[in-house]
Image (cartoon, helix red, strand yellow):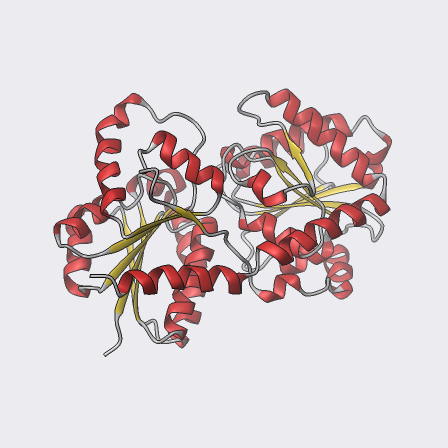
Length: 395
């Protein structure tokens, strides 16, 4: 009888959702019995509203269908889950190992506590660690979280910076923790398809010779769209503005606010709101620059995808992004330190790259080489499964 692995994730959004999909499929392909639990905590339900949660569940369902084809039939969706819900899941499944895939260190707190009580071995994957000091009100929870890390068979961070922050703010023991960089599927590394570029530009009324700045991220405050608006205000005063168009893929709490800002600025023809996309590959093929001025990240998959496609990337110097870009692309000052410096640097970078195709090509090729060396999905899966297999065999 095959060993049973429970992948328990919270919150089931963004890059964590995509990471889970890769790992769940790999586990099923390796012959393990897999149960996949996707939890959306109460505060996120309130923040996103019913329409936002429905969109989130629809996106998750598309991945679930692929997982079922591989034999992952045990799927659980939990909204505003209670400790009772988590206990029922763990009692019913009775797994040999749990993989807790977290969107933040405090995520999956109650299920981890239950796993310890039930003596179920577990591995923790931390997808995002915010770079600011947690509030004093979290002190008791952080003390217990430290015991979770001690009890965990392994703790995986997606970047060296996230690992450092776990030790600094969340009491991860110095002897525990390892970094496994995320990776993306082979299709992101395929050469750009010129037909995608021509089709999307014609469909959205973007000139063939325009310079398209693309962003794929939730339209929430943490992703820094407000800094793009600030940079656009400066870019409108420069000659390169005549060439520039922006395409933003995602949904979130700022959608209406951003649309209103764009309308008031009179630049609706220059910024395309694409909504939630099931796949961004075509838009990567159609774009010239990738932009992500976030306030906090783990190690963004969207940057890896843009690098793999050979786009030059401009992003904030936060969390795992410097580790991700290395000497390629351009790092902006953190908006948490100086928002105006972020805006100014973003405008200057887009101005320079938008005016020089050869420079864009050179930087994009450097990004692509780094992605090929570091961010292949096959490597991520192999390293992650090695951790799971090693800890399944441990007493």
